[in-house]
Each structure stands twice: as structure tokens, then as C-alpha cells.
Image 1 (tube, rainbow, N blue to C red):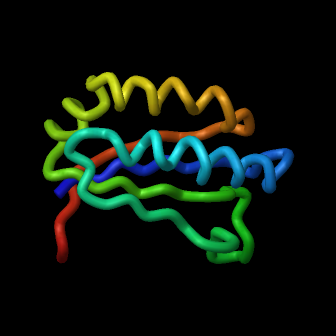
Image 2: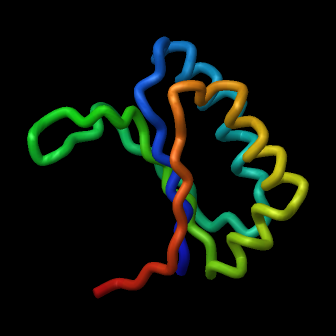
Length: 102
């Protein structure tokens, strides 16, 4: 299993972010080929010292790193990546890696 993490910074207008994210971006991302699971954090993202500056973390699961590469190179993956400019103006970090239960 491999996962892609999209870590969104606090938007200036959380309500507008949520409307666009859930109404437009999530449906677009769910069309990415090879996507196995899509999870998002609910409520405040917490750090060890309390509320973190991060607004939302999305975790997308795929079969492998190769599957992520293939998915993101697809027309749907490219469209999803391009869509970030439409709503993630506060910033988003995208990271990915192989995962394993320990």
C-alpha cells in the first residue's frame, strides 16, 4: 500500500474552502484511476501543544508508489493537481510514500 497526503494550510475563508473542496475538488479527485480510499480529517488538526496551523489533511490510498505515479500522470490526476490553484491559496503540501502495518 502507498499513500498520498495533501496537507492544507489554514484558508482565509474556511467556509469557501469547504464548499469548493467538498463540492468540486473531492468529486474530481475520486475519479483518479487506481484510488483505493480517500480520507480527510474532521475538525481541528491537533499537534502536541494544541491546535495546529494545518487546516485539513487528505489521505489517498493506492496499491503502490508506481500506482500513484501512474494515477497522477493520468488526465484525471493532472486535472486534480491543477485544481489546487483554484482553492488552496493558503498552501498545500503533497507528500507520498509506501506504507506498512507494524
